[in-house]
Structure formats: C-alpha cells, structure tokens
Figure 1 (cartoon, helix red, strand yellow):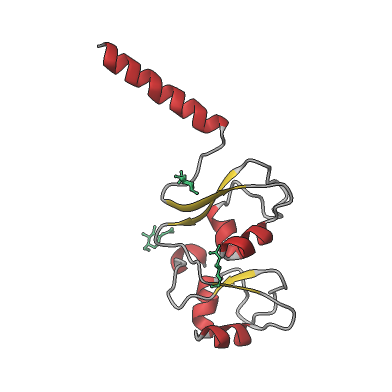
Figure 2 (cartoon, protein in one colour):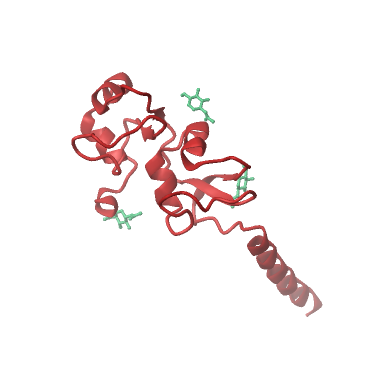
Length: 145
Ligand SMILES: *[C@@H]1O[C@H](CO)[C@@H](O)[C@H](O)[C@H]1NC(C)=O
Ligand SMILES: *[C@@H]1O[C@H](CO)[C@@H](O)[C@H](O)[C@H]1NC(C)=O
Ligand SMILES: *[C@@H]1O[C@H](CO)[C@@H](O)[C@H](O)[C@H]1NC(C)=O
C-alpha cells in the first residue's frame, strides 16, 4: 500500500519536473540538445549535422517557421530514430544541387527526396542552409509531399 502510493507520487513529481524543464521531446527522439544563447536553427543544424528540413519537421509546432521562438534552456529534438539523417552538407555560396549531389556521390532524386524543402529545380537553397546528403532515404515521401 505505502509502496504503491509512494510510486504514484514519484511518477507525478517526475511528470511535473519534465514539464518545468521543457523536456517534452517527441516520441523516439534520437538526439536532443539544449538551446544556448545566440543559437539559430541553421546554426544548430550546421553544428549537429541535422538538415534544415529535418530540424523544422521534427520540431513542427514547437519551433515556428521563421525560427524566432527558440529560447535558452529549451530542449529540442534533432532527429527521430530511423528517420535521422546525420550525413549533411552546409551550403556555401556557389553550391548547386548538382555540385552537392555529385560531391556526395548521390543522385539528385535522393538529394531532393531527403530535402523536401528544396524545390525540384533547386533554385531556393541558400548559403548556411544544411542539406541531408545521405545515400539512404530518410524522409517519408507520402508524409512530406
Ligand atoms: C537527451 O540527450 C541526452 C544526452 O545528450 C540524453 O542523456 C537524454 O536521455 C536525452 N533525452 C531524451 C528524452 O531523449
Ligand atoms: C558532422 O559531420 C562532419 C563531416 O562528416 C564531421 O566531421 C563532424 O564531426 C560531424 N559533427 C557532429 C557533431 O556530428
Ligand atoms: C510513412 O509512411 C508509412 C506508409 O505510408 C506510414 O504508415 C507512416 O505513418 C509514415 N510516417 C510518417 C512519419 O508520416
């Protein structure tokens, strides 16, 4: 009796603690970090090898589309197990989808599949953006397109 009452109290306290600490990470979170002063979404993507698309997709509903609501101490997920691309390229001035795919040894179709935020003629990438350049497809096509 006492033991189960005590366990129940601990569960409640743990639940409150995780809410206070803001650790409501999505199920199956593979990698997480705590936001530091000065962090930006693309800065986090570049530092941790997470594509710009993946960081936004994993945190949709948490980080807004302009990425202006990050806060210091916030715990964010970088990838979901099984859908976590960590082979990435940081876009530089002059990079094209063709040069990036070629350097990574992957097809344009694979690059586009893993980066659904890039348009099919690849005219909307920008320096500082992070693309997934893995040869494996991580993005569920039915979900993203
Ligand atoms: C967050 O990452 C840390 C290590 O960086 C890990 O110890 C912790 O279990 C992770 N939390 C969740 C909920 O995945
Ligand atoms: C990101 O990828 C680069 C290139 O593969 C690697 O050198 C670096 O250690 C990786 N960084 C992290 C945080 O995994
Ligand atoms: C990926 O596709 C499968 C099969 O269509 C579906 O069951 C699953 O829910 C999708 N996953 C996501 C994350 O949308």
